[in-house]
Length: 399
Image (tube, rainbow, N blue to C red):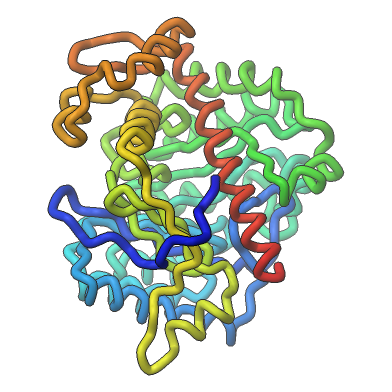
């Protein structure tokens, strides 16, 4: 993922169309997990409060530029690390924009009545909990057992949280080197027993930042095992859930982690955020003190680090990839948006068709069973490239 270094650092003008999504990044964690490639630092209350104040000023800048948003996704890091600041920040966004849905990430130890009540009051519709696994041995390797408790305790907290929000999602990971098929089966039995609204089962993703730590902690990754484990996950969950994406399983229509599927445009706010507006991809500075400083001036400025306008071909390819990740693409809709017929992607369609990944249901192309796993691979590689970009930026920022 590359950004030219000679382009002016500004956002494109807002154009009419579908409402965009507001992604907000909170890069603070009480402790850091060895496999995580996201932009995050160890929690400091003073720095974190300064950060939230700056974040609210950034939200106001987007309002002043004429942007509007229909949904909010708050990721991290651990967004609920300072629940009072998060509540105030969501209130600012709801005051400025016509928000219809809000999703927030959290960790199992934050599923307390006090925090959950604040989130509900703040308008959160969807809560996404980073579980990763219920296996105690694997949790110990992840350095999560001491932090969040045994798998049975995490399951009990999830059960107590069910019904409080429109959607309760559990984020899981498959293909840790030490993870066996039996571990996956037990995790799936726990999930099905709980009857969660939604489950997102990510493949293990390693980046330049984490690959050596993952190897030392868990062992060598067996990519051949990935397909077998995904097959188990898809087969077991298909009995009770439908595919919202190639790795997200929902009981009903609901917001998902991959907001890039549901929203054509998304603004990235917060240090290290990446956004995509009007065909332009951009990234904010990864330097947290610099981020705060840029937004704390008398005349605050957007904390942009880099921008990259996409060509029409890149935009069409990007949306084709993302729509199919969400299980299907309407080529008539794509043609209406970009003025290009499906033949514009003839090479890609032929290649994926030859691989057995697509079936045609005019005007749609949809993923086959084989295609779902092919898209898992494609999206794993896509996010790995994004994570490598994050690593490069974090190193330059001194992390």
